[in-house]
Image 1: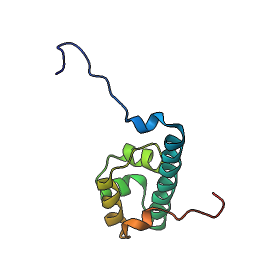
Image 2: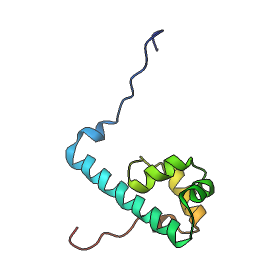
Image 3: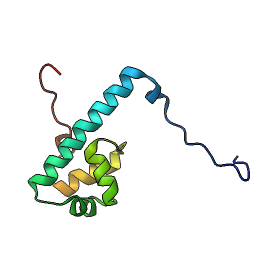
Image 4: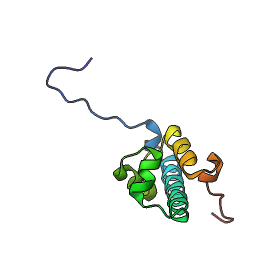
Length: 98
């Protein structure tokens, strides 16, 4: 229960304290962000237009494409609907040797 006058602290999940896991998450967020950007550009959309189509604030769209947003499944489904691609197409295949 929050104490009056005290600001609750934001707690990060334990997965962010595990080096290899945290690095893998960051890498995949960048890859998905790059894919989202590719799809947006293929459709000739600005970040603002894409954010509107997905149902996001434009600033969040920027963070997603940069790989700086922790994407929810709901956001990914909304992006796949907006871009008219299967959900799996948001996840680029690993290139050999990576």
